[in-house]
Amino acid sequence: MRHSRAEEARTEPPLAADLGTPAVLLNQVVALEVGSCPCPVGIHRWAGDGVSTILLTPTQAQVWARAGRLTLVSAEGDEYRLTVLAPEEGATATLGAHWPLREPSGRVRRIASAAAHDVGELLTFPAWLARTAHISGERNQQLARLVNRIRVGSPVTVVHYGQTFGHEHPAGPKQLHPYDHKGLVGHEGWPHEL
Image (tube, rainbow, N blue to C red; front, side):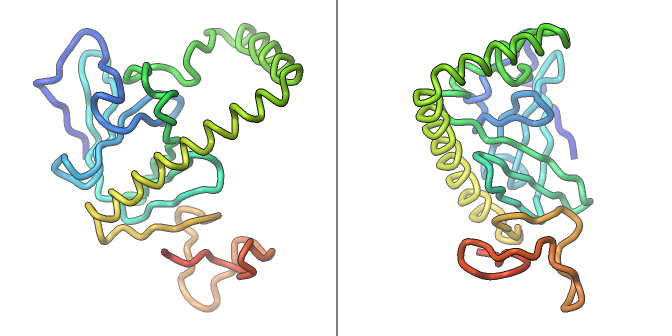
């Protein structure tokens, strides 16, 4: 369901942090609002001339192993694959901004920039590793707070942790496991709901 806020019509996009928790959806900065909109979750996007909101009562929230990764699945089966940003990443991000911020436009420029970025990371590996670990931890803290708010606002939302796949959840004892290896706690197969 899409909803547009007329009172928020503007010429310039607002900061994502002003509307909710900053996140990335399809390489664009969005804001996740939980518990204070007509549905349990609102995904605010910039529509060019104002804020457009996707209202969502997720049936599933899939929390991935990579930092800040969250997939929300609607009752219609639509999947919204998000990356929740750390507070320092989202502090200056405006709604609708291309992610990563300050990435150059044009394919050749992006490739050259990525190569230079990778060389810089290689030369400063210890500092890069510490910075990356810090950002990952901050993203995961934001994600944990967000998932807890989703659980309170939408008790019907099933939360999966680990490697789940949108439409392939276990339908019975004959359902095949998505992977055959054992996880950290030694259980094989589908992750348990928490």
